[in-house]
Length: 225
Image (tube, rainbow, N blue to C red; front, side, top):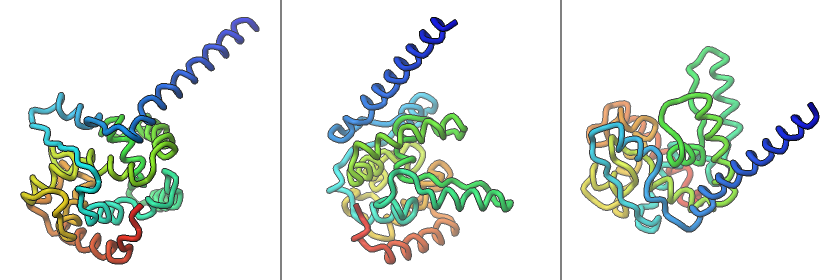
């Protein structure tokens, strides 16, 4: 029995080290290497008939207005937290306990982990893996690099991935030329890019756009990492 226990412990340690090593292997290089795509793009390509539109551009060729709009919309504490916004998580739990809808409290860091490595459909397994991949992304990548990758892999519409493809599809211009109102409108679709359309915004999206623009004014560009 002791021999079996020692064997199990030894293999558990080996397996743990293997998982940690593989996690480092797929996260650390992102500090210098631009990912060619994401798990979301790959799944979209093989599970739908739509064309995938994606073009990587460095953050210098993405309007700062879009970077600020995404932070204002999705994760206002992004420059300061370490991957997880505990205040937002607590608020979401309290809201749910009081009978409200269980809302997401994912940071941009968590959304990046999800887009790069996981799948769209919610589950506790995915949430656990999302937490697992978020930690090394935060450890190895500066905030600006994380934001650069996120802006290049986030989905802004069915088959529309990244700021450059989104700007050209919705506004007929490069991402570098996006105005504040256009950037805020693009940010409105991030919670449900297959449901919302920045080219044909509903009253809900337009109200959301106005809210995001107010938040952008409050934050200011000094808030960018």
